[in-house]
Image 1 (cartoon, rainbow, N blue to C red):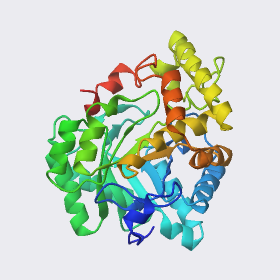
Image 2: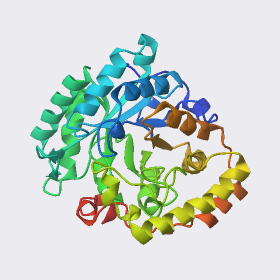
Image 3: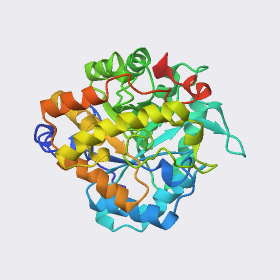
Length: 355
């Protein structure tokens, strides 16, 4: 992983959908798409380790620079996987990789989640373990996965800022926070980006959170751009999910909710077909299109676990959506059209962004 930010003029980077762009006013230069690596270790059923490593290599070869992970994805497995992928990648590709790491989730031996820990001592502890698993001397972007309700965000961000000062972390990020928390955190130290769910069927950030991020010069790394495969065009009504696939508990994948949501996908498919694109490419292109008029401040994270899905996602960079296209897409899939919450109730309760 590189120890310095690539040099280029931000003014020249936002003109090309394939060029690097600044992640917020203070963050690093990143590729227009990032690779979300969670599914290579957990929550979407079994994964193929060799294919996962090959997919990370293919992403780097295609110019993707941002690899997103969490220290709790597979209880460290995901960080070790990224370590392996980077160690076995050509040096030039390894040097372009930037790691975005979430921390703070507390797990049980059985795999359950019991809360989040944002105490400064815990922040330093989590970072030490991540650095060891990743095999690097620094983390490029470091963020707590969910706000610890028992610890002021100022204390958590202050601890990350100390890691930045010590050289162990390059940039501070946040995850799933509301506008007020975003402002409080930014008052402590520069924040590069907010990682938050944003897709055609998850548009809650548009009312307050996204305007606040833009006001503060904070970029957005959008996860769930295909809503965990729901709006990818590949999910079918009769699909049976594995016991270790958390979508089996997700409200949007249940019964009438699923049928309703896949009707939305069918409407999107008609537009995608007219564009000569896939449903997934059209959905990703829509998220990409939300950024350019604001300085390309939205970077979608694609959760491809296989090279063929990665290739499809990269094709979104070649999909040009006109104003008429965007209007048609939003008519087919209006804001708030999705049926079901994006997480089960117990997980929604941890989201500062939903308060």
